[in-house]
Image (cartoon, rainbow, N blue to C red):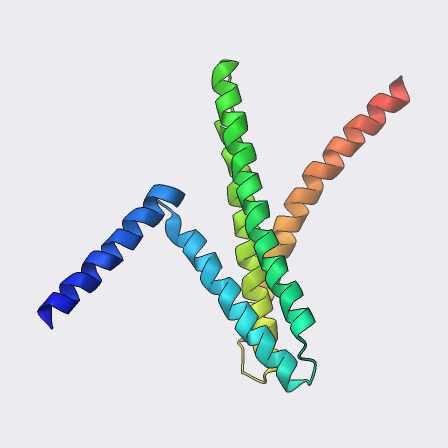
Length: 164
């Protein structure tokens, strides 16, 4: 039994070391998103099954959507990395560009959590209202922060076009 525990500990330590090497010190956020993806898929499937809306085509679309999330996250971190490296070449501090990836990851963590709670509500599981409201507020705050940046940039461009 002791040898089995040693092997389990070794395997667990190896997995944590590998995840840390790939995703860095905050690997658990990525692992958390993966767990949330799986939980959302399961709760969504159960809610659809309960409502007699279960379809393999819809399920496949949901899985493809989740794969798409991971692609967007990878691209957003890659963009941040590219700008950080470009900043070194140009002798400019562009390290703040790493925030793009973290912003996208945070957005997907909130959205997956909200989706799970919505599925649980559809399954008649008692969910504390403050959780739903809190995640909705967080999602709105993230969206509003993004809209302010987009709107601000658009207004600046519109004003420049009017001046010309």
